[in-house]
Length: 362
Picture 1 (cartoon, helix red, strand yellow):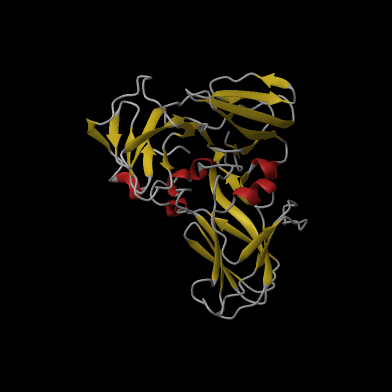
Picture 2 (cartoon, rainbow, N blue to C red):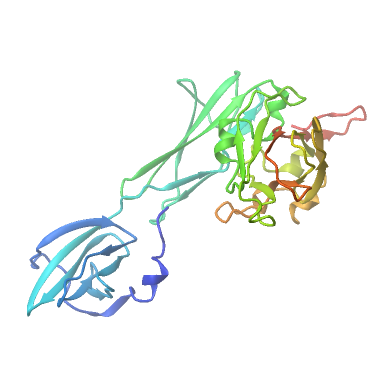
């Protein structure tokens, strides 16, 4: 991501001065050498003993130089002067925009029903030159799929690939992808969060403390693969209070509007350790005994989401790793290695009006 500000070390001293020293480069200045650098960065040289230095912005105004370093705030030709023994030497630095836009997608994986419209991921483009737009296209294999009002309607089972491309004003491009899986597997359609996939392993946590997550062939009661959590905290005795729990922040769930779409969330835990474990999720705590076998944990109090009661995204700041978390905490002060299996997190869809259980809300 491009920086909109330089580090605090330079913030006070690197502001453009109003006085012009040395004049704007109109092509008549002779340079000893020319170098290139990234915009919104700090350019540094090794000062020579006995020499003094000054630096100039593209408009010719002097900018502060500190210990051989000065800030490049935008594109253009900067230069600095070295004065030594009465002789002035000038060196040019061309600031170029080399950083591509950053693309953020509201999701990178989603399951969909055949014949039902599904929204494509929301796209956010972050770029210091103000670029906000990106092109979005969807493919099923090699065939491009029609996008209508930000949605597609899968007509066949299989994987649909969402491709997003953004280009800034300097011609730098970046790309991102999301996958939409059209399936008739109700477990997958009702999955809120995946631990047991490569995607889940890569994105499920911004913080791992004494824990290792592995893929496994162990099946949860609904027949889907579960994740294996190896509880490993070798420094437990030295930091008993600090590391007696293992928590993971849940980033990018498959569904974010939990209270809007589901009447409850649920998952299964299988505690294979010799100690009782507390399972904390969304502010609630559940007790799972040692060697428990599969225990179903159900959660329906969406008010614990923190006031808004509906959206996951309002509860977490991925940059600061704050928000909704999944926590495994020993009920005993003693330490022992062990394994806990956890299924993916599922949602029970809300029903509509019918007395006999109703139909799934679409």
